[in-house]
Length: 83
Image 1 (cartoon, rainbow, N blue to C red):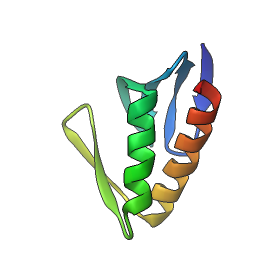
Image 2 (cartoon, rainbow, N blue to C red):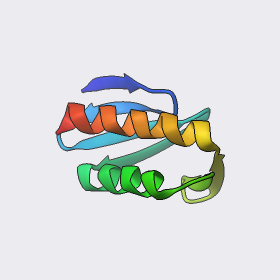
Image 3 (cartoon, rainbow, N blue to C red):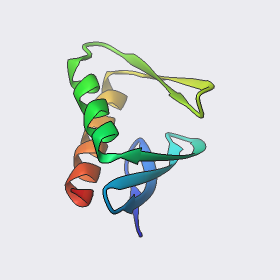
């Protein structure tokens, strides 16, 4: 497995998935499939201002415009590396 340390997402690149270990400064443990990563990138692309994501199904994190762009870049890089 290869480590990925993006601006918003940190984790491990796996075959056809991503093991998410940290969102911004919050620790987590989730496996995201390639399909989920693509859907998340598509969702962020449609947002104009800000949005919330939840970590561990409990902790809401507000992503401002800069965070959303950074996360989109992280997701694009992750998808390219595991696809």
